[in-house]
Structures are given as structure tokens and as C-alpha cells.
Image (cartoon, rainbow, N blue to C red; front, side, top):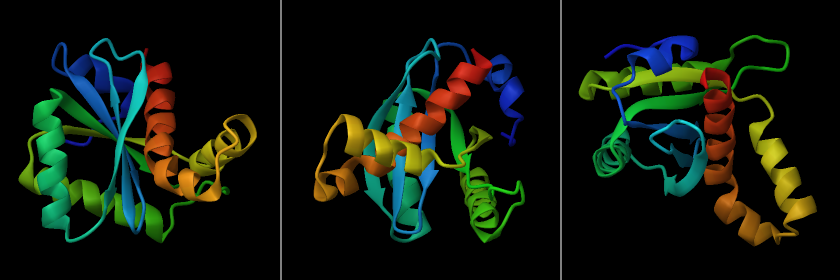
Length: 153
């Protein structure tokens, strides 16, 4: 399956399937899931990155377990709107997934998603630094996915 424009994702997604949101970091992958009605994003887990093959095995397991029909990858566009090395890395990750998996992939501009989640966790949840480190990536994935769901809804 191809990379699709986020605006077309809902129309090509198989019925009653969920979307998986991913926040790709250099050390972790934050994972979030939508409900089948594509309304609400919920954090799932944070994967410690290792070799791509091992990361993909875990992602494929989540895809199967949770009836996932598509991935929404956070695309770390620079504040000036340009794409740098992190965007290239995300696009390469998607190409690697597509080489081994038959799934839809869309990108979502993730600028400031981790910063926004950090502020919420500090100001509203009053979480310790250690606890924030444990949840920030999966919460950022949920933030990314929720933005995409709100747009396609």
C-alpha cells in the first residue's frame, strides 16, 4: 500500500479499522491508537528502538492485535517549514515499513508536539521528570494522531 495524503486517508482506510500514530525518536517510538470510528487517540506504549527488524516485528504485532489499517507518522518539519535530516529519517522509516508491510501510511506535521505534551505533563499533571520521560513519547504519538483525526473527521 502506498503513502497517502492525510486528507484522503479516511476514504481509503478499510472499514472499522483503526489508525496507529507513531512519534519516531532516535531512541524510542511513541505509539498511539485510534478508536474504529476515528474520533479519539489513546496512548499505547513507548518502544525502545533497536534494530529496524525488531522494531517492525513489534509494530506488526500491534497492527494485527488492534486491527490497524493505517499509520500516521509524525513528520518533524522545521519551524521554517523545511524538511531536514529528521524528516528524511522518518520518510526512510516509512519506505522500510512499506517494503515489508501492506499498510497505508500518512504523514502529519508534528511541530512542537513533544513540547506541547511536556507543558501539559508539567503544568496540568504535575509529573516528575522521571515519570514524564516514561510517558512523553506515547503521549506525543497520541497528540499527533489526535491532530490527524480532528483534521480528517
